[in-house]
Image 1 (cartoon, rainbow, N blue to C red):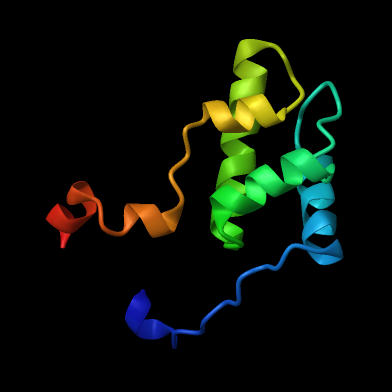
Image 2 (image 1 turned 30 degrees about the vertical axis):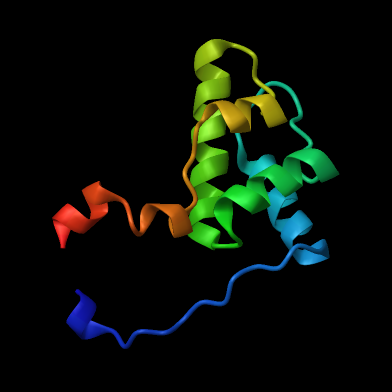
Length: 103
């Protein structure tokens, strides 16, 4: 598939109104019983720090957190539940021995 499409860099999100609106959109699509308020400052900053502004990372973190919230019955995503994911930002994964072994 990679040979069929030209590569196009996707800019990182910056922390601001557009990013907060993205979090609100993601939250609206989640099947959680209780509001998580992902665009509140503390949780939005936690997601942003772990995602490093990369859309795939943002969506992955929120999706994993929502899955865990449903699984444990709590049903809002909280800053504590984001931290409990033990997500390693991409910049710290690049030099990991496991990643280097795949190359």
